[in-house]
Image (cartoon, rainbow, N blue to C red):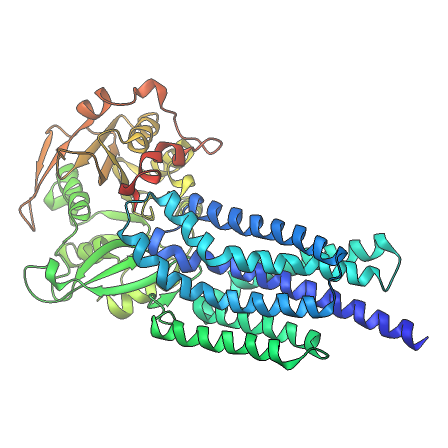
Amino acid sequence: MKTLEFDHYRIAWFGATIFLSSAILLVIEITAGRLIAPYVGVSIYSWTSIIGVILAGLSLGNWLGGRWADRGGNEKSAGIVLALAGVFCLFSLLALSLVAPLLQKSRLDLVSASFLYVLSMFFVPSVLIGIVTPLLTTLALRLDDRAGHIVGRMHALGALGSIIGTFLTGYVLIQYFGSRNIILACSLALFVLAVPFFQRMPKTPVVALLGAAIGLGALIEARGGWANPCDRESNYFCLRVVDASHEAPFGKAKALILDHLLHSINHESEPAMLLSPYVHLMDELVLDHFGQEAASELDYFFAGGGAYTQPRAIQALSPGAKVTVAEIDSAVTQLAVDELFVSIDDMHVFHHDARTVLERLQDARFDVVVTDAFHDIAVPYHLVTQEFAQLVKSRMNASGLFVTNVVDAFPDPKMVKSLAKTLKAEFDHVDIWVDDIPQRRRRMTYVVSASGREIRDDVLDARRGFERRWYRINVPLMSVGTPMNELPVFTDDFVPVERMISSLLLTPEGL
């Protein structure tokens, strides 16, 4: 009877280990996205690399664990695997410090770079953690011959652990503890899980594993691997503020970096100084559309706040204007207030998705709607569709202006052309603007404007601020490269933006 009861405890212990190790693997998986974001950004391709590599490692680990269990794997084997998983989990931070400088200097495309980051950091920990479930399930079956009951329980516990690890990381851990602290905690947790399996094991292997972990920690320290490149981490971004005074003609300026994208630059004493050409262009399009006198009383809606560069400039230049901002990440707003010289006292700020905010503001009618929510080459799909264009138009006055910026390739920006085609289905006049006509293939920022009123001139000169000139390139852009009839209109049901920007994702220009 005592033996039977003891067997039940051991099975419960095996199940708890499977549950916790599965949770740890998903914590690592979600955290992986944050760790590589400062180097390759966040896109469907970076997440595909993360999920694919970790699933491949898990699959290989499951296969190896099953074979090992059939060939004499025991509780000591489980302890060794868990401890090694802890070592290689810690090694991921050292791998990042070694691989990042090499990949940053390489000419690899974004897809390849994302894959290599994840492969070097997380494949081995995934394999090792994958061994645990089939190994401990087989050991449990030696104690209880109800195969279906044991296998079903262990699989359920593994799945439940994965679910809890996912939600816990996404909702709590990232924003409160930071990515490197999470990886360290996962490593320690795997060591703790291994300890009970080492009770009857010689001390030499245990000491060796412990020494390896300590040595790794020292190497990570020497390589600066503990240093978090983020000033703050939110559920959405790795946030950094860097000195950008060299970009300004005088005085002090700071720039906001979201993951690895330079978002915008704010000058300390001159809020109206628009250092980024595309932000300056958006302001000039408003002046050209409404006239300088009327512009002082306009009602603006911004989909995306970021550094709040243009809303801040509007407050300084046009105190009579009304500014509403939908910034999904409250941490971005707080950082802008704390370090980027921004005051939101006279703005209406919503920390929700921009499309959701517009849906709720049913009685609002804006003169200008600005979308500046695109994150590097990662595109919020729901902000480029025809349905979104219809919503924007319904929330604008008849003479209103919609402007947005998009990062795409030159000379055949399929994403920009598809977006223009989509907007053309709702607005009478859609224009594409650039501040330079490149002489070679490159990545660049386009500004797209849409309204019911035509802009007559193909060249737009700055009326205030820096002496700059922008060019409308509708005709030449539509006449070269991919024919317009081959490009889709984006809808909520079909938004193939990754296919549209594949030239950036599959070439070095994307990084």
